[in-house]
Image (cartoon, rainbow, N blue to C red; front, side, top):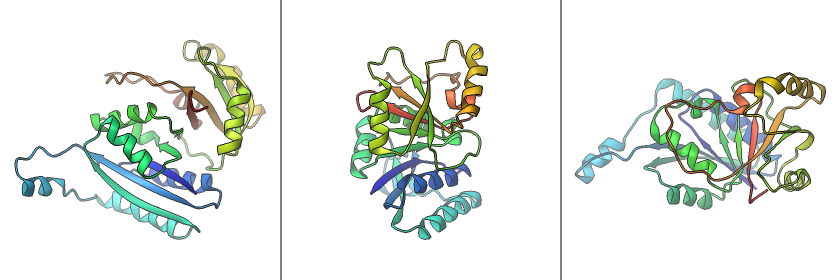
Length: 240
């Protein structure tokens, strides 16, 4: 059984994330955890604290949640769990990953665009965990990925064969092309990447990452999946 964690504010692309999780499960069964995080209420009494914690959903959020429940209810061997988390830290997030035995974190485009600091903090906490992360693109693509472009980090001591072996053991993706990390010269190599994506029918990017010190930046750096529009599977280097 594969378990998935989807941090969400219940925007429409949460539905795509759930569809992707169902597809990743490959009918082997799964538990999909929709996690909604909020700051801990600043209250002096326990009763006031509990009142502050009661936050209702908007009509659009309820519709998204209902759609997700419907999909899970009509999928064999799949369960859904709603986890409301008040307050967040690195040990707490790591504990959530371990408690739910999460095998893949799925981050939607809308969630990464959230402006509240606690959501930005969660995205950075996720990057520092050893759990793989699937960054969904800002466009609607199919949920069942098969052919991948591997973006090689020159500083990483990992061979493409090791990455493919990890993919074989945990997913069903095949690396059909590879390139070096392209952050600094994206404009120069973009035409070649577009040609390779079209030629090999690539529907997923694969990259590796290292843990980084958490920083809150006023200007967000555009991710590679936002530039190319494709989903990205990010693997922690020690894991891959």
